Length: 218
Image (tube, rainbow, N blue to C red; front, side, top):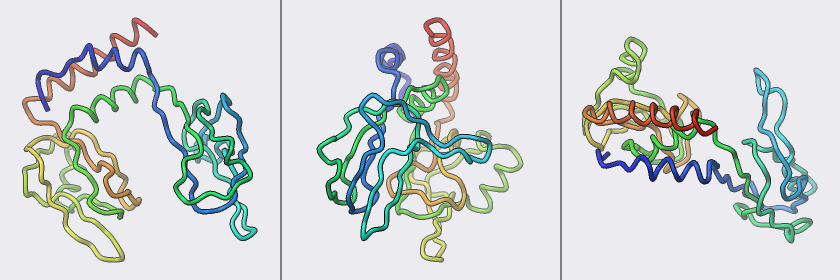
């Protein structure tokens, strides 16, 4: 992480385009029937227990087994590939994009992802903090914990087998946690974001700047 982060460039990027673009893919092979149109607003699941389902995006039918796929994020449908409607598609084929308006908190998190050292999941698996790290988090909170290269910080649980995962980045504080214990994480997704000790004031500066700039312009 560098002291020379160009705040103005980062902030102007989000001011000019304060959106995430979330691509939606076919979950498996099958015949697609779209349930939304270009420009339509969609919502993710809501309610205290997420009991209100998200907007239906498409139905996929394989061997007379139809399955409705719902939105995982709120926003506007864009770039829908209408020629696929009623056609057979392969698993992983892109169907549409959802333009998701970013909240201030999400913008701060996105900037963190650009400036923190991200430690990624080596495999698609379930992850837990090591017992030592978890007990320290429970006592003091993640941001009071400094980790060093080579330290066993996480346990990977795959096929009922637990494997220790060793940290391979620069020394720093666990600033952001991107996984939930026992919930599967895809290979290559970040598990934690680490902040070098001398960069902690910079992180606070990011939060202050984003809040000040957004309050004055939104």
